[in-house]
Image 1 (cartoon, rainbow, N blue to C red):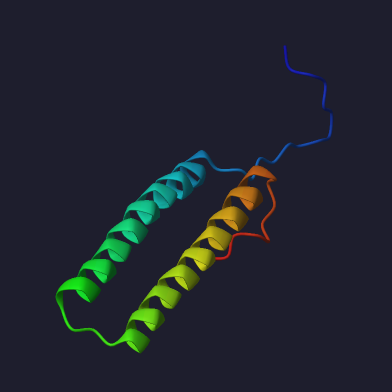
Image 2: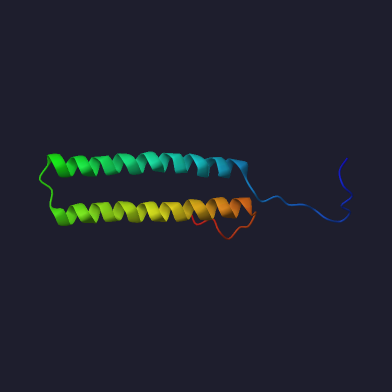
Length: 89
């Protein structure tokens, strides 16, 4: 039996499809990060690749990983707390 909530409407802002999409995006990004890191390592071993560009590629990859983690954290936190201000993307 539903509780007596006369005059009150419960608006649910959390979204199961959004939560599922964030979870799948996290899985995809793990594979993307590992494959890109393997390609950078392979490229540096097999081809002649300048050290300054190798450092730049690895640094940008880890910077992208940090931004992706921040985006996923804010998305999941905003979705589970049912707030609208933390979606970032």
